[in-house]
Amino acid sequence: MTTERTLSIIKPDAVKKNIIGKILQRFEDNGLKIVEARMQSLTKEKAKEFYKIHSARPFFNDLVSFITSGPILILVLEGENAIEKNRKIMGATDPKKAEKGTIRADFAESIDANAVHGSDGQDTAKGEIAFFFKN
Image (cartoon, rainbow, N blue to C red; front, side):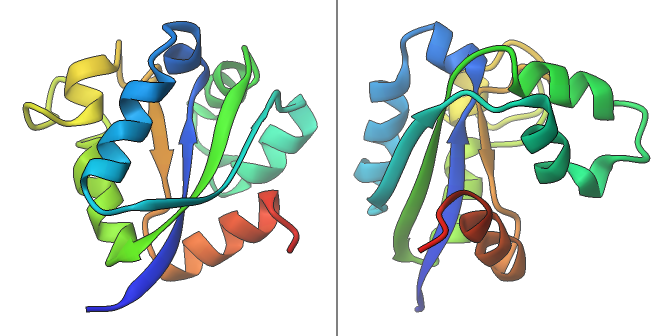
């Protein structure tokens, strides 16, 4: 097994519901360590830059509007196979398809307001971590 780092974002819907602690507990209970964290609100410009990979997709503007609708908690998680483990803890993007007991099955409202974001691979994780945490 490999110790990795991954980026996770607790999105505005989950922050608004005041369930940050419940989500963090799931990461920690599954062996992921929080090594960096910052609460902030994204500007539209920063959100567009972060999600530029989706810029040609029809949901891009909705994605940017949602992620800028309130504060988010940006995390760097570390642990054995952290990327895969985090994706399993989060569950499927569509909460209706997410496995019972995952963050999205338990806390997400919709495919758009789905509580959390997580890097989907090693290259993505490195880029997303560097995007938010310059060190």
